[in-house]
Image (cartoon, rainbow, N blue to C red; front, side, top):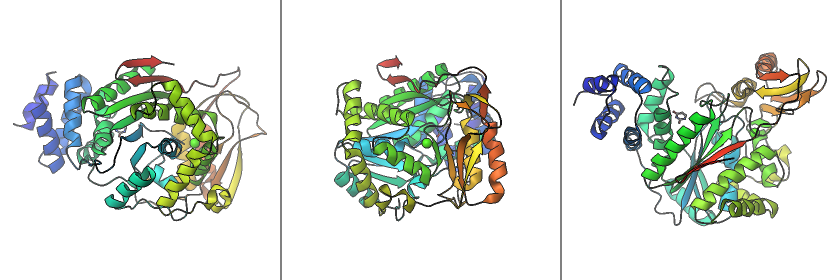
Length: 441
Ligand code: URA
Ligand code: CA
């Protein structure tokens, strides 16, 4: 087999065989196939597409390019959640203990933030003593005993995706449904869970911009997951603005704990309950969505979800006194109110720009080995539909660097579009996709 012939075939709009796809992925992972050849094939795939069978074969080849985690030592159904990329998205911190409090096993592999998106591990490391460097034995022990553990991504999960994703990033081949679906699902499948819920973001701040594309992506990922023997569902959620109010690390931990205390922002709470309800159904804990939803609401009301969060943090060395005293979390030396440049109703908030403004304040990193400031971030006081005047604060900035404030403010302001007429708060949950089809909300 020759890579040249595979590129030629896809260039001429022909279907690739399973063997050809595997040859490409294995060869590219071990360095036999060069970047320029892979780039040419990616562009041919981007332009001519892949059918469902090809996409499933691509996913499987990428999943098997590295370690496939074996979680069989954990009894019961193991669940996982993945988001296609949000800003201020604290759902994992809330959803996982909520689910674990009902006896569902959460064996989660999470990442760090890069660019304008935050990472679950960075957020959790705002908590004194908390660490994710568990051995596999400790990880499995914690999940078996307390239903929940989070570890960092191991190096060797879907290495083909790591290489291909970097290449797609610089060759204008990221936003293709088959390539996105196989990229996400290869990693999720390699992480070893039995049931996966996917949060597919749609809107200006997401990389799928239309509802139709989001449904296509969600349906394809559900098909891939189910085809590989894992229960899989997808929630299509709106991303015309950041989720909740906090964007950062320590301040997002506070926001998550607020929800676990049965308060906190309504949109964030609703998304957690929706994703969680799907997981409960897949874990055979409820028969209907409505039952699952009210079961989870009860876990927030009766304090069980918060208790599970506490056990989880303690299980990984964290000090949980901050739950009753947020002052024990890292605190910024500069806390500054930010005002709107003009009056009007907020029409949209470009999440990426808010994410970058927060990164400029110190909450994020440009390169994976950069230090981050856990105390830095942005608390948004006004969201879509709110009326803002020029003498009322629209956000609070947290930072330790006075010299970046102007830069961050400019970036933040550029995220907002205003309207002279009233604007409605957008509906968050657009659809739920299961193997049986799409339920539109
Ligand atoms: N996230 C991924 O992991 N892969 C993609 O291709 C897009 C988003
Ligand atoms: Ca948030």
